[in-house]
Amino acid sequence: MEGVIDSVTRDLLTRRPGFDWTVTEFVRVVDARLPPRVFHRHCPELQAAEGPSTPSGVPVHLQLLGSDPTALAANARQARRLGATSLDLNFGCPAKLVNRHDGGASLLRDPARVHAAVAAVHEAVGEAIPVTAKIRLGFSNRRLALSCALAAQDGGARQLVVHGRTRDEGYRPPAHWEWIGRIRHRLDIPVVANGDIWTLEDYWKARTLSGCRDVMLGRGALADPWLAPRIRHWLLTGERLPETHWADRAAVIAEYAALQRATLPPRVVISLVKQWLNQMRARDTEATRRFQALKRITDLGALLEGLEAPASSPVPTSTRRPLQPA
Image 1 (cartoon, helix red, strand yellow):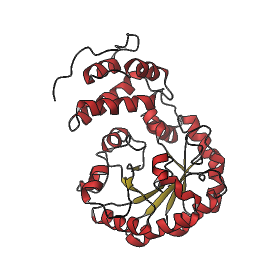
Image 2 (cartoon, rainbow, N blue to C red):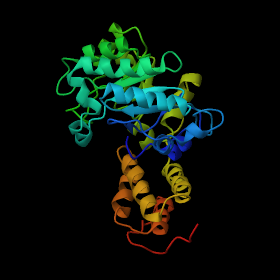
Image 3 (cartoon, helix red, strand yellow):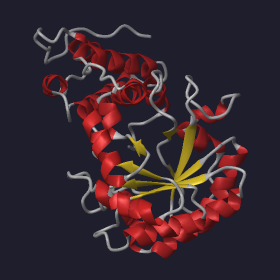
Image 4 (spheres, one colour):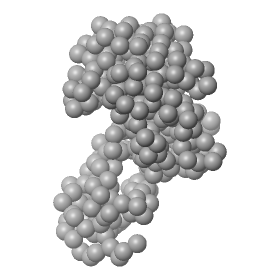
């Protein structure tokens, strides 16, 4: 979710009840302790007086990605000093660039390295704050999936999120929720299921096949910002909320653009808006139509005009008017 889930997105997605906690984009750790500004850029919520949480009060967990236990420990201590109340370790990122530089899912080829990384962070912060981790079902195959999960637990992880695919499987469907269940049966810590949860039906299938009490939403929450509230409402009442209309999706993106524009130049906001719209088209035909029509627009005002036009109206495919300065 690098480049997608920033503090503005976390704010917007947690304004309606649904999420119990959120996780930052990863802070990349190489071989040195990072300065406070790096942590604040990834997690500005650290500077909140009441602790790292979204404006609506949903806790924000800080995520680290790295492979050097010493450097991870130093940055864990730095994060704790800055106010982090939970640390998550990323062993799931499948990006080739990250893996080539010995980060993310690359560690899943050696459970001992997963253990060393988790143990170093756990020892650095002690019992003061919880350490959690996220893994996949292995790198090229699932042979070491359980060993990596046990290594994370033995290293001191208090919770484990498991994405139901290997690194080589990337995001190709299906997610193997039943394999997450095999891991859950062998661990003593809570296991959270992740991967291909786009709808209420997917949520229930993931829970049923994995046996997990909780799930983590990533791309599904961007594709439908009402997915977590829909799940929460169904759990509380047994009632299904109506499907999310395009006007509601467009309103979220428009507000996202307005918030980002307060600190970012229009060209960057345009890129971010298109990135979120691209995530939405995974499960929505109207979002697909809008993306195809708007993907070449280079003016923020015209882009937002095309997003907010009624579903029955033609979508502008070229720049119409500039957006007034903020």
